[in-house]
Amino acid sequence: MTNGESSDAAAKPSASEPSPVWANFVVTLGLWGLLLAVLNMFSAATPAQHVSWGGLLTFEAINPAFGTAKVDFHYEPLGDTIFMAACLAMVGFGLKAINETRGVSEWATSLIVNDTWTALADPSVGGGQRTMAAWCLLLGFAFYFWFGINHSGWMDVGVYSVTIALVAAGFALNHASRVPPGDENLD
Image 1: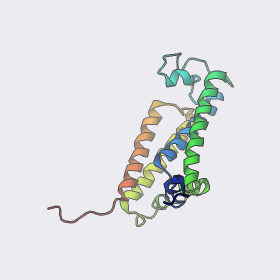
Image 2: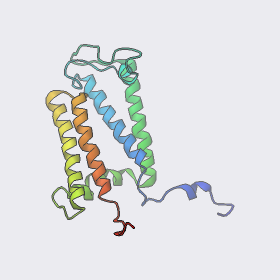
Image 3: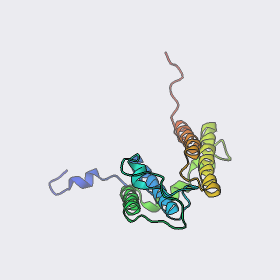
Image 4: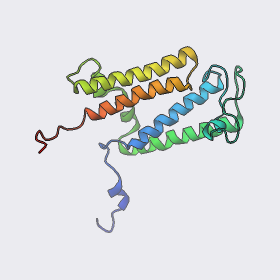
């Protein structure tokens, strides 16, 4: 580096590098939180009660998590505003990191157009592991949205356990299908 160059230019990743894993996770978590917040305000997050985000996130240290009876529309100015602001901040920080590496539009396109989803019908794309990964991911997300829409159970422990098992298996199989082959001889 010469005296005129900035150390920031050397540290900035190129546009072809993938976005950091934490950025993808933070954006997904923030968008999911916003979805739950909006559903909660319109009495659709749980079948019978509204969720108090302060109570839920503090394990009921400050107030009960599920206390208010369900009505048509319910907005708690302090709790809902803080929760939605935190979710928006997570989405903003994650998208900023994604935009610095490869761009938000390229990232959003890569969520739909990639070799994982083509493996749903073509095992030759990544082998049996990637085909199973794609099916686990699809079934996990489809089950969560189906149960949430049909039973207003977006925050149900049972639906979370099924969804997490399928999605985690899908991510694990997807990453395992991309591991390069090792040595044949283990001696």
